[in-house]
Image 1 (cartoon, rainbow, N blue to C red):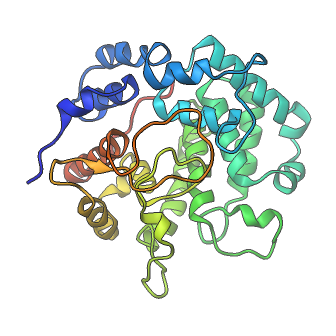
Image 2 (image 1 turned 180 degrees about the vertical axis):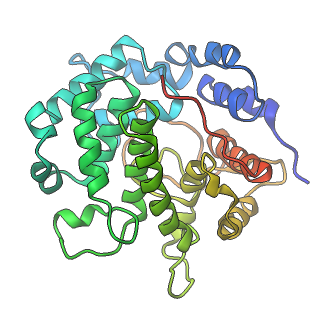
Image 3 (image 1 turned 60 degrees about the vertical axis):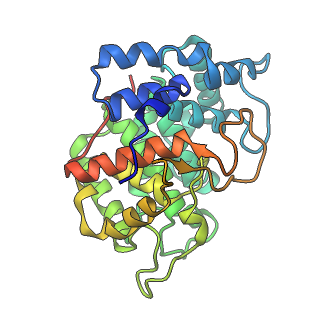
Length: 315
């Protein structure tokens, strides 16, 4: 049996350490919160702050722009009350979701990809933005759920689309979950929507055709971080560890796939990068990945326990 590299994880960035303490070591919140508060001052978090522009956001570009940076900062667990980042998040949302737009379902669904509506919802919930506008946005997103249980950005330009997208479904689910955690959506309403979406994913074993059983696309199996808008099996499993569906036998296949990528030293590698410029280089291609190891281990733990391991609310 491969070793569990907890000491190696704890030798990493504060963003890794605090999540390892919370999710793998079961340390009390007062301990891991101290570690989390180091993120803005050390390592990756400090590099992102140093990359801010004079206007208070981040440089334009594929994976460097403010929206992509905020998504990564949330993955890091950046403190949601950090003044500079809160200001950047609020300014971004004010620019994109005015009061009139928030209440205009037609404008939202015809002018903005559903993935981005999910991003806005997640960012706003995490950083404590305008609850009235976010609640309206959440309602629009919930009503856009497709008959098969998921969501698909293609609907905006191709209304005849009838099959959901794995990418869009998880971009939306993460936003809706964030909104539900801070009370912007009734928990029962969210759970009913989540169940339908996860059933859609489970019917596909997270990465296979529900008709032929073939792998839909190899990139779904890649071990990558950050995700940006891209779906992978590991991203899906990392979401599902917080849900009762983690015990579903249809996850046997994707979990076996994940475990098969583990190296003899107990660690998972960096296999691929999503093309584009990044502000921070996290880990060396082909080397051992603390990000992927942390996420994989907490999936395996949740599966072994047979229960969801939901983290506390973002705030």
